[in-house]
Image 1: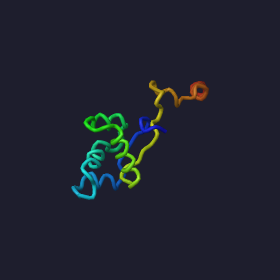
Image 2: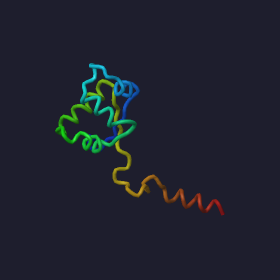
Image 3: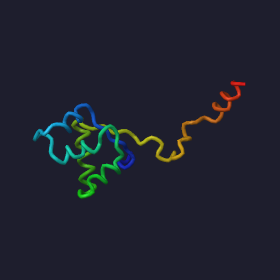
Image 4: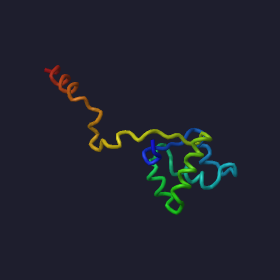
Length: 100
């Protein structure tokens, strides 16, 4: 899965690190943690850090995942812009017909 197709979110440890001013967490990493929140697409993170090369952003995301401050999940339904991909037409028809 490409990073451009992932949603990043802070872990509990990431939440604590984003609030701390500890020298253990570099300023760039804290900035990424602030941008991520509870679920942010990598494109939004990239836009928020537009003054930094994309390769650096990917490195930071990878490092933050490795140390357990971030987690990522596959972007659900990237091609399902009308949100119909989860529907089973036959099941919907049967439920409708069962109602009488």
